[in-house]
Length: 459
Image 1: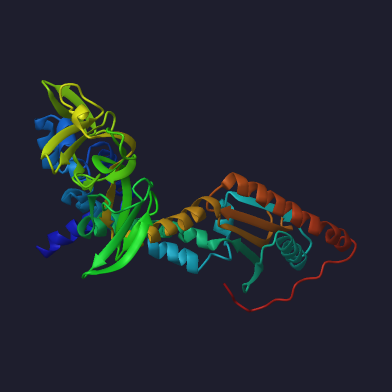
Image 2: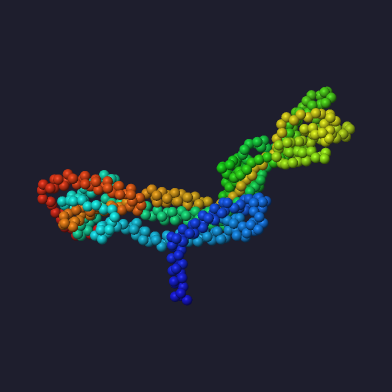
């Protein structure tokens, strides 16, 4: 049993750490994420709207497979865990070699390495110190710090820039893990999102503004208050309140009228009425709003509401007289066959109509956002190093060419953007030639001095 288990574990690990496996899993995540964007999602979408959008059979299939709530479906969370395991396995598999490469750079190239390096050049020199000195000056000219490597049989130079670029892929891996952890795992299990409709109180004087005054009451005490607008949410204990919509309820908030006595004995007066509010016009007469219809239509001698949109409003007033117990149905506008406006002791002229408003609030709790934002920041850093920071290396070694003459071997490599690096390498070689030229001419006129032998060893 144990013998058969080891190959299975090894094969599973090999599959998880494969780049192909990671790519396939990420493609699946992208596909299902697109599906979650296209398909109407519960509970954010109204059930009636979903029912209208899909046939009953299709809706049953979508609900059964979890496609109407993709990001909270157990199979999607399992897929994200599998992607995370694949990223971790790939990183663990490759990190030791990458770390050795990062922590112990190859500074003294042997003959086999020099022979196969694609980017290299040879320059004739008279002695080793002359060539190394010229190369050091060329490095300083290119703002590169060189290191002199001492071996028992030779000296050489090594210079590099942006070694951290070799670890950029692991920064990207860490950012993906943080993003998946926060958005697809923590928020999927512990986060929630809902929709809340609120209307302001009758005494509010801010109903016409395109923002909402929101107060949070905790244990009977008001603990927070804010005027929220779109893209400026209110946050309390990790719960976010977004203004998602704003509109009119179709209900009466305040009606401003001029009441003019028909007898002409009194003066016109301005009155303000709310729904069912009773206002005294004189000692004998009172008026109240019995009914407000935002979009009225008359049918068979009755007034009906066609919709809740305030497009064709009508107000039904009841005027009562205490002495005669007479009740008059007054309509604005006057509706023939229904209104009794001529029997009213007062004529009413509308001045201003205010209807109620509502605020649609999207309420969400997303405890994984700290990980999401940390992942986004790390992703930006990692991608910056991946695409814009290049690790370049230069080696300079005095060698003997095929004819036995002394030459300066110069090699270079870059982990990406090779074409651009070839131009940089060419400029470096030209700078070394420039530094060599006057020294070479001086040395040609006198015997070359040999370097003393040394037994100091170094990397």
